[in-house]
Image (cartoon, rainbow, N blue to C red; front, top):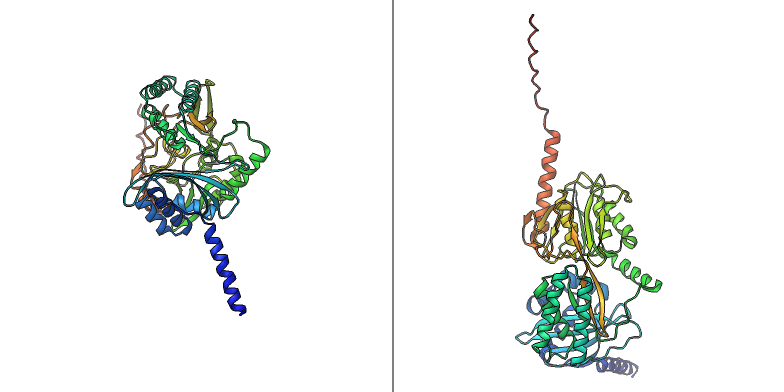
Length: 454
């Protein structure tokens, strides 16, 4: 009887948990959400890879695996709104109390495929709302964007052309039927990039009112520091490959003040290797000071790496290698940088800096082509525009990689970049060893000059 009672208790608990799970609609968007949750929560690389291949090719398998490791997966809390091709939902990280609002837009098919997918952490104490756009709000958003582009965008002539394009679209009624914030933000981003071709420029929507931008508080800074450290400062792997080749993979250039010790530890681990490979195939950029810090380990003398010109302030900031770094420098070893089309912004600067200084061989794919640092501006209660406000100027080429990307020295598919770099490094090491052990060349003594004649 006791065993039966125990079974009933467990069954009731299971039924209660099952009843609390929100029902996912059987729409194309709902089926896609279910597929994403299933693949993501599994933590299984093969299942995640199949999801990317069949449903969302724009996603990155390694990025999803890393995100899964940081969050532990997601519990579905609620379906906020649902239409056949788009769905808004709320989830909670399994490994923390962080909740997020997701917006998923799909194209119908068998299976449906993802058009756009955004997941935004909800600040503590903030309640998401269903925002229905009207003409007045659309006008406010466009007015705010146009003002910020005029004041801050790196190229004032391009800013004027973008503003003119927005007005033409508005006058033609191209935005009249858009009532969803994410769709509107995506359309504005596309229309602006159609003129500027600037991958840093974007409009974002949040389903909650954002407070005015202000300087981070001490609590904000502490929270960001904790997050960076818990993510190991975006350093994914540091190891010594066969042949004594150092390998470092990191996916962002985070705050040097916080992550400097992580850099020092990584560089110390590979300090005595015979060659070094930096894997930036998933690196989306970050802080210029962090770019300079890591590059500083590779140069014996102070080296001018990059300049940033700010149009709004009419100032130029120079970036040089650091005069001092914790630990040993690696100034003699051959260096290889791995790239893909996902390598962007600060990841491209690091690559371009080393390539133009002839300090590294770049192996992989042409990079994303973003050389304009960006700053966020609140333009309406729910919308923000990221405005590129500065441009990189390389001290050697007097230009940058904006719109073109960094062209590798050795072009191969990103998936083959590591094996190719290992082969190049091994050949280089063997060639240097052979040269070191080669017998000295025979010295032929020159004949003495003839005696002077009187």
